[in-house]
Image 1 (tube, rainbow, N blue to C red):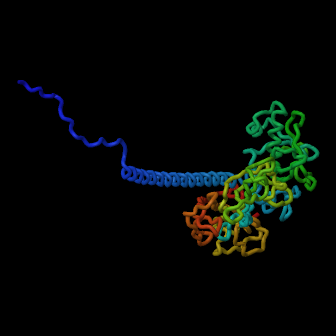
Image 2: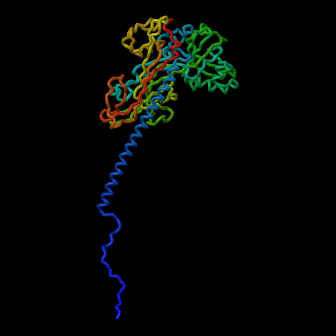
Length: 450
């Protein structure tokens, strides 16, 4: 008898299958580790981004101050070019008389270099705390062209420029049609304005006999195709002694350039808004302190009576240019030749050197034996100037709370940090350039005695 055996295996007892996913503990550990990793990455990336932005800011500041210094260098080295270093001292115009011959103003308007130490310091933010200084500089020279032009003397104090002269063709490029060059001549000699209503420049006329006339330009006309005609204001000029009709002379336009502190904002608060940019000081707020957002501004000013240099009145604001934003310091010092006369070897020293005996010769038109600063030397003896030392600084727009302010320790110490709000921790970053600029026109033309 056979026994049937079932092939079905007995069901074994198995553990319940684990559900897919993570346990709460695993989730907590993973979230904690992820949070730590993300936080670390965030802080590293944030620090790297902030460091990059700081370095970019510093690089931009460094570039800005270098470009500004090069612009200033170019203008300073052109001072006196085809113009006058010190017309009163050199006796220029003595035969011609006129408004620019007498001592003092307005003769000082046409000297090549004029400096007023500290005239703009009050316009800098927290100037006392930061021990900084801002000067005012005025330059006179031919900043419009590289030439002087041959002209014929006509009746009624007029000069007709010879359009066939090589210098004229080099500057203006044509002598075919009067209409082709009238606007260009007007721009060069009249500053781009109608001299009948807004004379902004003067001309320096040099005769074949060496006589010099400095006169205001009152009109520019086409001259019926024979050449541009310049009409001069010679109401106080002895024209008979200066030059004769039909005489040929050379003439050069002179511009008067001012470097001063102003605001790069307009009255409405925006950059160059409307038609009156760079007017006045536009106040802003840095912390609890009112800031003027000062900038170094270059503009052309007139040869007329002095006017407030930063209010825009009569100062040809259309010519104003921002040379350096967020100005921290603009300090100009002179190096002058102190020898008594030309027969002695040069003796060039810093103008404010207290160790120098400043007993100057009588030809400097001063009795001041203690003229120991750059301001005095630029006023009484500009013919002695040989070079200038420029210290130019810019700052960041705002303070960095992590960048601690440290007192400068004297105006001759390096300017490294700038305090905008003494009530708030931190300081603005600063970049400075210091350089010596030689004045070739002064070195070549300046005389120390008659």
